[in-house]
Picture 1 (cartoon, rainbow over the protein chains, first blue to last red):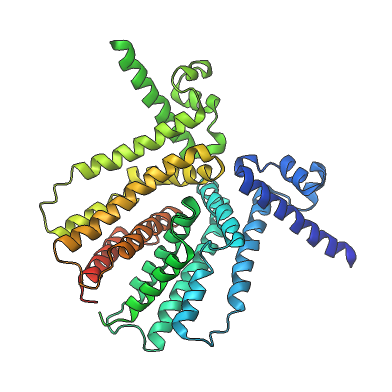
Picture 2 (picture 1 turned 90 degrees about the vertical axis):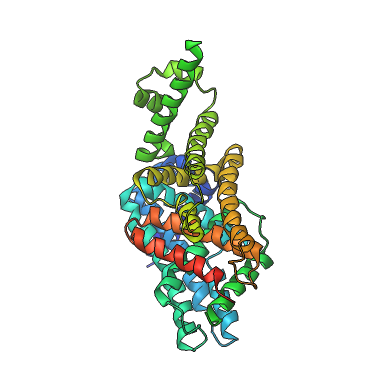
Amino acid sequence: MPKIVDHDKQRQRVAEAAIRVIRKSGFEQASVRNIAQEAGLSAGSMRHYFSTQAELFAFCMNIFRERIEKRIERMTFRGPILQELKHLILQFLPLDEERTMEMEVWLSFNAKALIHPELRVLSNEMHNALYRASKFVIETLVERRLGSPGLEPEIETEKLYALIDGLAIHQIMQPGRLDVERIEFMIDDHLNMLCRSL
Amino acid sequence: MPKIVDHDKQRQRVAEAAIRVIRKSGFEQASVRNIAQEAGLSAGSMRHYFSTQAELFAFCMNIFRERIEKRIERMTFRGPILQELKHLILQFLPLDEERTMEMEVWLSFNAKALIHPELRVLSNEMHNALYRASKFVIETLVERRLGSPGLEPEIETEKLYALIDGLAIHQIMQPGRLDVERIEFMIDDHLNMLCRSL
């Protein structure tokens, strides 16, 4: 069924064009007309691929979520566990070009979701993915008896979840203020702190 | 000089109208026309108060910064120090209507600053205010010999700075997920952790 394949490919092409427009000029400029032009398609053809702008933006955010999930799926967790957990956390931080681009658009998307409630579900799904990763880190420390005996899993999950998102937003808004080594050191320090006797 | 007073008052009026428009409909709708309408002024008169949109947005963000500074200036630091430091941190979290409104608009402003480099300076100034507050918290713990001997001030300042911004963004994006007591408990827990022997 070549037609369906084409259709999926075109949706991907439109979404990638939308991401480029949003990153370059913000959601304000992400009109059907501008996205069509960026994708090299006619404005009229756009409705074949996405019936609403919200549907298109949802598709874009899903691309990011799938990329993060794929990066995590590739992890084997066979190495030293604290290193592996750090590596998991780093997937949510904008430390290379791909993740920086994702998170810049993601920040704009969050601002947009504040105004458009229909986008909130998707924003929450992405936040929940980070929350689950934070929970996994803390639970792994507890299960492997590495976490300090006084560690409160729920509180530490919330703190890690906030710490990662805060680091991500600082890295996006003030790029270069902290270098990658510094950020890795902070994550190491935090994981080590969780393992020390409190 | 009643004319100057009027001018300042009108600038404030325009800025407050802009904040309401941004909060309700996002920056996309924050056109001169819409802001003038919200302020009850003619679109033509707007240029008397702000020569560019960037100048208007800068004025709006300064209103927020001044509010935070005023809230902090009112603090006496005469009570139990950990309580006072927690109270200082809470000024940066959206735990009441005023701070929620400020931080929703602030999040949108950050997204806009990603696209418009001329707004970056202001975004950085606000981030620096939170960084300085985080530094003050950690330095106070060290000066009063409450911080654990192994505490690394720079790393802990960065972590606290990220933790507060992460909590703020989660509270904005997922309101009600954590209640005020829970957030206060997390801050208490974090401050206590910094004071324990590592």
